[in-house]
Length: 547
View (tube, rainbow, N blue to C red):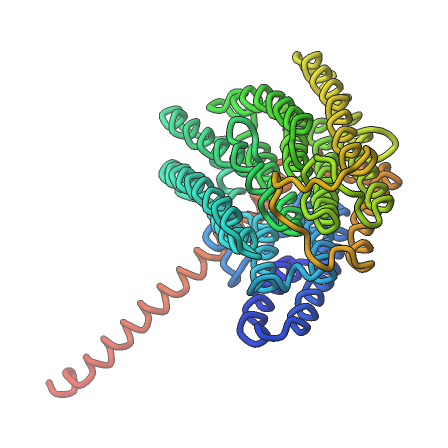
């Protein structure tokens, strides 16, 4: 049983982050040791949680021993275990890269803010309460703003302000949706909401539909789905490369929230929802995929090309999610793992290019040092991101194509995915040709004013980058076990009663608890009455004696 370990991924960074800020802020070596130690601990804990969840048990952890739905709960199932493990693996790899290249030393408080970022990510994926999902979203927002502006610069600060303002607007909508839900149901515990939504009075259907639509809007903003994607290209292109690589998992939190909330609380079978989510998601996902690939084809810098590739990957992911069946969600989860790793690797390659050329603009310049090695790394990452064989991107897209075969709109889905894969390949080939293979001159463009870290050319930095690419190869080789796990996770999501009973207890357990509470209350009342009677008798004795 891993019940008491469920809170560890949140507690570890929550403790180490302040410790770094308060006691190690002037010693970068100690900060690196503490940060990497935290990363290794979180990786070990999350892998243990993944192994525990693979057996099919759903476990809940009640903070302060307050039972749900009154207390705060964390819930571990196959989906949350997969997400926290992916986040821990990626977080450790990117932190190792930042330490190896010196990115962490280009501004203040990088390591402490990084720990809070990890805390927010883990909390959002483990919480069983939708209000605390909002709380962890805000922790993410605050920490990501600090990371976004790490290293300084006017353009980076401007991009950070734009990012924060847009996400604060999303947070406001989130609060409106939560207020509506609490007004209707009187609870924000996800399991309790799921149970009460199934018994919703007809008079509250319109309010619930509005709340579900507002939540969808917020989650799609976090997931950068069209037309709410406009914040992402500038944010990712302007952010420090390791931060942009970490941000590749942040958009997946939006996808995770959509999958969690709209399979558990608001499934399509719920009458007020009536197919609303899938109807909105499918066309938005197709257009997002198209816009992202157009950006890949027309981007002027490698940084913007990779940013638009991240948008395109979210489109593909949401195409699979929009089916809201087991096959679609299973395909989406496999593609989610692949696209997160591929986008992170590409952002780190942007840093390698900037460190060698002074920018990532697609203009003819003098050959870069070690250009052949960087070109090879770019080739592998680009093939993976475009979804070409033999890497996991090809497997992921095959799974998505197979999952949407039974949908009425499957022709559109197949056409968009296949055509955009070809266009993305052309866009990456164009970028690779300009950066690595075409004749060069010494003209230095100023389209991309950002430079990589001075230590980006170090062997340790290249090793960290190669490690993330190796994870893509591993996901390809282990496609069989990985897809079996995602299929089991999808099946568990659609068996809503398992989640509800794990958090609230089975009907028999709840009846027994209510009976025990009633007996305890009756016993306490009886003791009070007995005490009151004894006091009365005692007070009456002297009176009787006096008379």
